[in-house]
Image 1 (cartoon, rainbow, N blue to C red):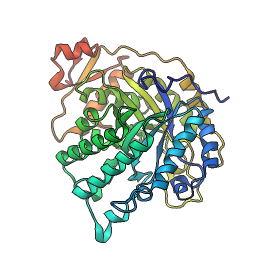
Image 2: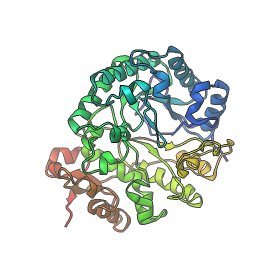
Image 3: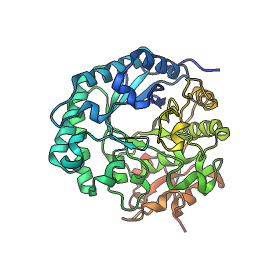
Image 4: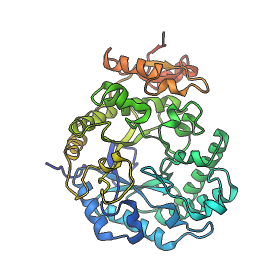
Length: 417
C-alpha cells in the first residue's frame, strides 16, 4: 500500500529540525522539456503521486537557457512558471528546494547560446558570465522568498559536471561558489537554505577542481550525491554488497569529516537504483537499506531519491539507466521500489552512536583512496560490515584535537595499518 504523507515541520519552523524524505522531481510528460509548454494540470498529478508515497519534499529544476536566453535578459514568464510549480507542490503538501542554474541534467548539458560557439564564455571564470548567473540566482531568490513551502535555493544541479568544457582551478571554483552563494542569499534573504551540489568527483577525484572542502564548508549545509556507479561501486562489489547498501551512510560520514563545524548537517540529496548497476529485483531492498543505514547518521538533514518518474522511452538518446530510475514508470504506475521507499521512510529512525573513527590521511592528489576501490574506502567498509562497528570519519589533522573529537562523540581513533 502507499502511505499518506508524513508529519513534517510547519513552514515557520527550522527545516533542519527533523529528518526529511523526498524525491527529485522529473516530470512524467516530456521530462524537463515540459518547461517549453508547462502544464500545471500534469504537474499537479505528478506531485499528488509523490505526496501519496509519504514524502515531504521535492527538488525541482528549470532550464538555464529558458530562464536566461540572453546574458542580460531573464524571462519573467519562465520565472513565473517556476514559482507556480513551487506553489503547486505546496498545495500537495510538499516543501520545495529550487535548483537555479541547469546546467547539467541526466547526461545532457543546457547552456544558453550566449555561452557557446562564437560567443563562448567559460561559465566559471568569465566575469560577465559570473555576473549573469548571480543576477539569475538573485532574481529567483526574490521571486521565491517568503513562499511558505520553500526549503531554499540551490545554485544548480551538479555544476562540477561542466568542468570538462570549462577549465577551472580550485581557487576559481571557490570564487565562483562564494559569488553565487552570496547572490542567492541576497535574493532569498533570511527565508530558507542556500546550498550547492557536486557529483562524486568532488570527493573521490584526485585532481578535480571542486574539492571536498568546498562542498563541506560553503553554503548552509553539505549535499552529497552517493551514486552506486561512481567508481564502479556496484559492479566492483556487487549490487547486494555492503559497499553498495552502506554507500549513502559512508558518503554522509565522509562529508562530515571535511566540515569545520562538527554540527553541520549533511543532505543525501541524490541516490537511486540505476539499472543494470542495481537490477530491478534488488532495487526495493537497496532502497530500504539505503534509507535505514543513512538515517542512523547524526546530523543527517534528509534523503532525497532520484527520481520521481522514469524517462519515457519515446525520448531518444538518454543513457539506458535514465529510463529506469523513477519511483513511477512512464505511465505513472508506482514501481515496487516506490512501495519499499514509502515503507522505509515511514519507519521510526534512530541515530546510532559513532564513538570510533577511522582516520583519513588524504594528502593533495590522493582523494581516490576514499572512493570505491580505494584503501580507505575498503577499510571503512570492513569495519562496518565485518567488525560490527559504525565508524565515523576524521581527517588526520583533526585526529588529536580532543575538543573536536568530543564534539562529535568520538572516543577512539583508528589508523590504517
